[in-house]
Image (spheres, protein in one colour):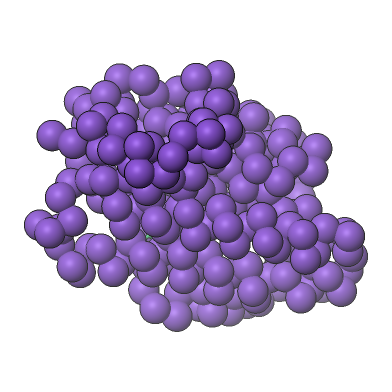
Length: 257
Ligand SMILES: NC(=O)c1ccc[n+]([C@@H]2O[C@H](COP(=O)([O-])OP(=O)(O)OC[C@H]3O[C@@H](n4cnc5c(N)ncnc54)[C@H](OP(=O)(O)O)[C@@H]3O)[C@@H](O)[C@H]2O)c1
């Protein structure tokens, strides 16, 4: 028999692993997805013992084209249907765009935007049919503005933010909650991958536990956009008040090296 599941991508570390701790007490079958199997197996054991929840670990590279369909096939093979989708897997690349690795840049766009969209598109029809479901898409504070020296990453997160807000409007009256998490800098492995280690971004980082807790609460309260951290909350308003070019200049000054 098919069971309903909560699927969390990017669950091997950081915000995704913290979110797994918050969804586990709901006792819905949990599916942890990322490339590194070992940390997910360890997390799965902890969650099983602590909450008595069933957990399935799927190791998959979500930046490969076709990964979303591959994951849906994995879920079908486990007789699982998505009830809650947490699109959290993602990474950033900081630095001068002219010097960025084009292969890594495309992989980032594939993971942060295409896989996220394709997973949502494949999971949504079942949710609408059942008249229930939740989608939590992880964007970023940088999604509110153009970010020199983080140009493509920020643009992928603008995509996630725009897509999520539009989708929330489309399906909100049909039983499906859509929420977009916009964390500011958060103390995770993100900074190693993005090459922002030691930068101002790392120095002002929030804890991933706090970010996950605000995200979980916001999703369940029907909040469409969740900006975490008291320092970050004024940023969306600031972006409406300050001329775009001035904001872009200021962000470039902070992120430039
Ligand atoms: N930390 C921040 O400052 C910050 C701020 C705003 C937004 N965010 C967003 O928050 C989300 C989570 O990041 P985090 O901060 O928790 O960093 P993290 O600890 O590095 O977590 C990233 C997660 O994504 C997974 N992932 C990366 N590439 C993948 C791939 N190709 N296929 C499958 N999974 C992949 C990683 O697992 P594997 O390496 O095992 O595959 C890991 O579980 C990301 O979308 C990020 O953009 C982070």
